[in-house]
Image 1 (cartoon, rainbow, N blue to C red):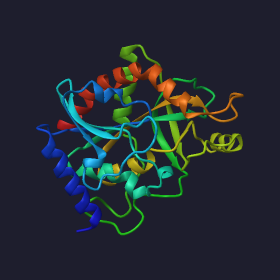
Image 2 (cartoon, rainbow, N blue to C red):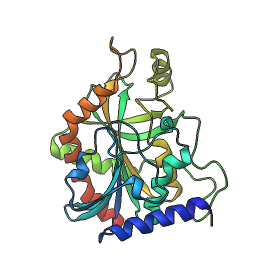
Image 3 (cartoon, helix red, strand yellow):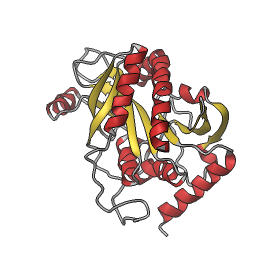
Length: 279
């Protein structure tokens, strides 16, 4: 067995032993978006530091714990915060929680993040359903020897973001009276924000959003056959669009302001995704 497989198996067994629940859906709650996990019932909270082999989050706005609980009647495993390349982790380490989810028996994941708006159509606070991505991080979590127990050597990424789940999210937003967009997410390594010239380049190549996360997680999830829904909160307009400096405090302030919309949308999509997982 590869170390990655062994380590993911150990972490999964530990998490399942800590809670009577058997989660069907995994969630990753990005910068400032962890409030959803605070509302789960029958919850068990486990710091990442206590989970075998699990990477520890150091980013501001990331609580750094796994919360296993019920969203209504649906058992979920929710990560309050993630790790990033800019913290010094490799793409494999960033994607490791997806490996753990897979070994826990989770078949669908919902990923959230805070992102900069590249498309001029967006305004600060917009919610965007990710339809595709552009990986400009210079890393891929599948580099190195492939373990067939995780997935194929060359996984297809044509349907990286599961279209039926995107449609579920769009319809749920409509029922809630909330406007959502669809967009392409460009991932860069960070931690510096992009320059205005880089944003012009990203717009030229078809990006609508830019951020420093999510893509390694999506690649690993799809490698294992998990279906993915990803939603961004546009916390700031990217460099050069507005005549102002970018800062992380603005990111956290915006996610706090739109957090209730985000939570409402997650609660609305979970039952339908759960039905798909159980089908």
